[in-house]
Length: 308
Image 1: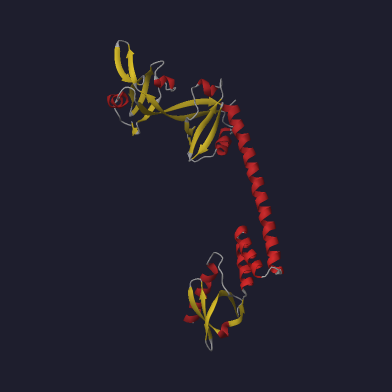
Image 2 (image 1 turned 180 degrees about the vertical axis):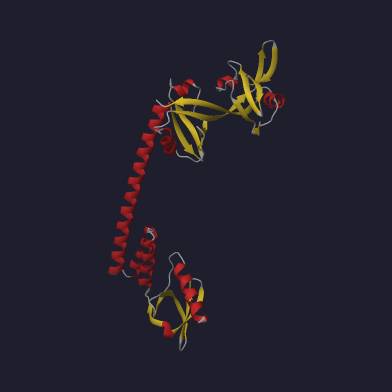
């Protein structure tokens, strides 16, 4: 009883094992099950069989038949395993190896023809699906451009403004290429595709959306003379709102203004440092720095756009 149970477990493991393998012999059991492996030795009442998970001993009185496969048949069998899992190139490789052994083998010739046909059909299907997806993507990108005045690109989990239509409401609100969209009306867009965002933006029940955009810019520090004061900076005055650091005002013509920064923008980082809880004095000290150098400033801004 114990020996039968062990044997049954081995057969279950063998059946569950995935992935094609090259085995020369097939042992057909009395109950119809098959063992693929190599008979390494034979006794009066047993076979020792090398299988994928080791070596097992099979009693002869449980065996109905032992089939010794030729190298050609073995390659075709392996190719058929690959074919069943739709690995067409791997299947063709095995079938062509069989043809090298016997170029006149009808089984190998038929196997190559079948695999090539299935591969061609699969390639054609994938190409058609890719073309359809590209057409749909272009169509949805066009809908975003028409409805909101900008185009998007999704890469590396980030959703970024690619272009802004001149004269559009997005342009009027100061949205610029390379601005990153963080969320849309509460929807986090990280890892979203442009197609998924387009579907969300064209919800017939919603016409107006709030976009949280993030902009990172290298701003040039320079000496600024402003209202009888002289200082090195980028042309912004800061304030706090709770634990947030916000822009109070922007000096026209200075680097912050040229980068499109505006009053009420939230400054989320300076030189990569999180500004949450940072004081105005500490922020000003980082931004001030040395004249004729750059400082990296990242802001966030919420803008509301109505779909056209």
